[in-house]
Image (cartoon, rainbow, N blue to C red; front, side, top):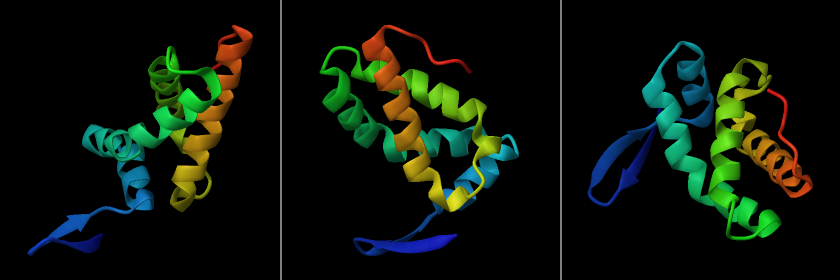
Length: 102
């Protein structure tokens, strides 16, 4: 795990790859940590595509979809762009009035 200095304390911060591996091993706290790390940025992306109403729903659906397919992520250190692609796909489907297949 990476150690990052925050203020006057050292705090251990897991990398994306470490979190992905923990999720793959059933660690729900790691899944929550990924959500907390990226939710605001993903909502901003969804909002830019679908507008303010529906952006949070798009992100929730995209995150659930991503969590269900996390084993398909070939390069765990590429979590961020992977989440962005999934969110963009869900947002575009939302605009077309379609659901994304799991």
